[in-house]
Length: 450
Ligand SMILES: Cc1cc2nc3c(=O)[nH]c(=O)nc-3n(C[C@H](O)[C@H](O)[C@H](O)COP(=O)(O)OP(=O)(O)OC[C@H]3O[C@@H](n4cnc5c(N)ncnc54)[C@H](O)[C@@H]3O)c2cc1C
Image (cartoon, rainbow, N blue to C red; front, top):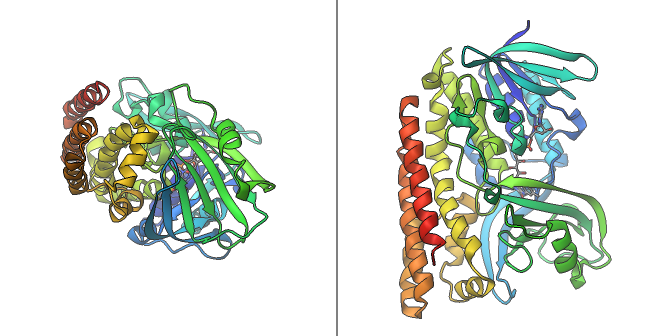
């Protein structure tokens, strides 16, 4: 039986970048995906990525075929569209396939093996530890490989994590309200797009309940735009495609535009998974809930989780137990997860606001453009921003909103603290999870009481 240090299931951006980061440290890596190479990373997406993510990980900017557009900033529109916040920040619209393929090629150059059109079907568990995986391809049928670490990078499907014993903390299942269901099309418009380097986000409970709709131009291809709409899951809201067609595509600028590509997918919008590693298996990317709960961007944080895993493997110096690999949690939670968890608190608050409240908040600039920059591009909401907004609200005589914002600020602080104090060893995990679960239950009870 072939033996690997690391077997990675899924060659989306998380798995492909993990294969690259891990193989360059000299580990023997196998990367497998059910899709063929020409569809690597091809999942419906807004395709936007902040430059800071690439800078942080020392990744070269997309060029040539990898680049669909340059981004200078984002306009966020209020429900009536009467108010607009401009958040400046550089980034890219990427060609998701070419960008992902870059990492697969680099991993192969480093010596990694890559199997396309190959499904990782099952984890092989012996004596309570994952020791291998069963693979399947149409050409070869089923076979087993042995590995020191199996990585679930299968996105929202969590194809391997779902098969683990229920009591393993890495199972940490998703509540349907903690995801967005989204649909997007790439369209060619008849007219020029004004300011093609500015992405547009439209917040509206009527059009996109619990989410938003977006208009992301590809500035390298005049007239081409990535346009989509996401709604919160588990609430019985209409299908995002229906909403896009009935509430958005009838706008004058979009009429008679031509569909080039279309598709939908779900995206997790919650705090990070409780642990990214357990008993011989790790989770990264969407399968570890690394997506930003507010804006749904997940490519940058998927790559960060992959990088943290490679860093943990190096630190572990040939050991593979939970404590040896615990660095992946410490790295991810302190660098990004704590902020994401605090934003999850904010996400729940935003999803409860009516259009009238959202309009009011934006009109009165409760949170300013420069503050939104921090939220949308860095995935961070400084608690000081909420304090400022609270002072404003106090003067504006909206006691219910003020009271709620006070609760939100309080729990954002508590949750961030809890994640910054993530257990140093695996034996502290159970008590920590129960503390964090209690915090979220308390918060939900207070938020939804109104
Ligand atoms: C509509 C939409 C718009 C979005 N817009 C943005 C955006 O503008 N910017 C941004 O940063 N993020 C955006 N996101 C989020 C982003 O797309 C994801 O966070 C990111 O693609 C996650 O990458 P991943 O590698 O974890 O998962 P995926 O991209 O889902 O990759 C998982 C891979 O695993 C493979 N796989 C599944 N099961 C198996 C198996 N059993 N064996 C082998 N292979 C398997 C799949 O074929 C797939 O290739 C958006 C998401 C959606 C749905």
